[in-house]
Length: 59
Image (cartoon, rainbow, N blue to C red; front, side, top):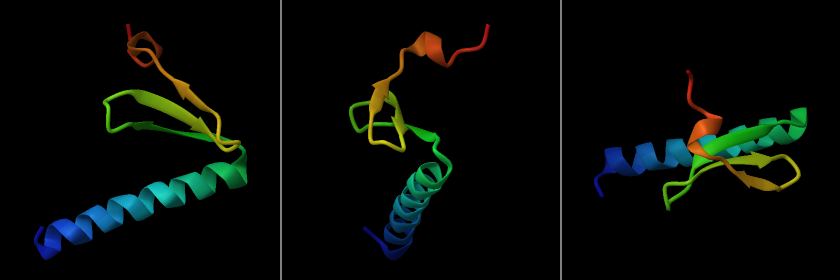
């Protein structure tokens, strides 16, 4: 990886970590896509809920 790619990967990781801290402080959750392509909702308690496509589409 070149330096730009490494810096970008680090920034993305830090942003995710900050989102988790904010969710914990506010008693909320974060939503993200796993390495397997599954969209999940992770609560500040550590509970992870898998979302179905119908859960996040607009009709």
